[in-house]
Image 1 (cartoon, rainbow, N blue to C red):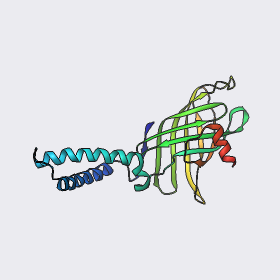
Image 2 (image 1 turned 90 degrees about the horizontal axis):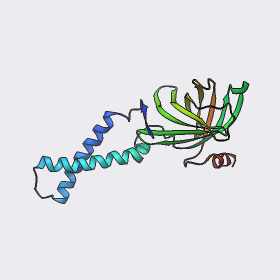
Image 3 (image 1 turned 60 degrees about the horizontal axis):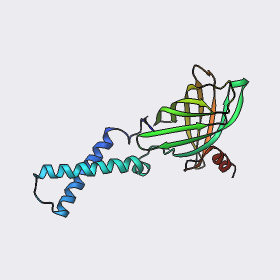
Image 4 (image 1 turned 45 degrees about the vertical axis):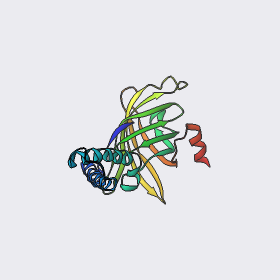
Length: 207
């Protein structure tokens, strides 16, 4: 997984500051309850305890806390949809996206019958009214049985995040660089919060 940028209010120094304050308050409470021996000065003892609590809070918030204590879009799971591309005069193929996300890290894998791609960087933006989405750069490699015209290449994808009757959808455009030089559109909807394989995801989508 790699880091990703976000303009969300619950990212950045302010959250670290809040967690630091909570750690100091918790450390003071722990010291009072447990009556720790005065083997060090009051400040040093609290600092050591607060440091451990702070590390724990960061870990818990990174893995799970942000999902319930922030407004950051939680895109974890398996997404199924289609890619319409200019390749070969315009074709549409099914695709499966697997997205793993924590508070500060993300990894996106997109798979078709011909290729697999993985992200190298990403940005999740939602602070502009009417403009909520995900942008990422990726590296795509052909599968072993792909056609000979398929080559490894880089690309950029911009997906808008919309909600339709409680169902979250991703849709947008992509373009590729040297070695491919195509463009197209992608539409996706989430079929599971779990990470599913290509065939399993397509089967799930049909249920």
